[in-house]
Length: 112
Image (cartoon, one colour):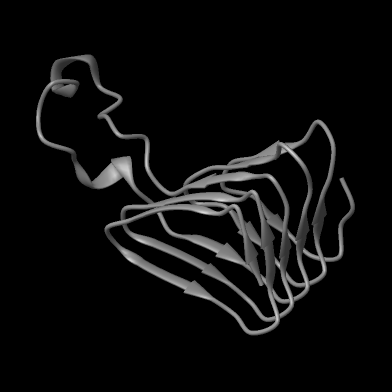
């Protein structure tokens, strides 16, 4: 089910079956995937920085380190106003709740 969802997709976005997205914003330059039954609230999910980090490359075309895939597992819940950044993996049944953001972490059955 999709309600008030914002999508900016240039890469490959895969949303599993029986997922619920409510107010979710997804920016996908490379790959964003979610497993079956995921609950994605008013969250911001992006797999890109939109810029190079190195000062000498900031105005150059985007390099390979500017994007990394995001993997959201089965039955994951991402709560209101959470941010998931490039390279993050949230394994099945993980919950990302209030005042929590993750970058390139692996969680399984963890409640934050």
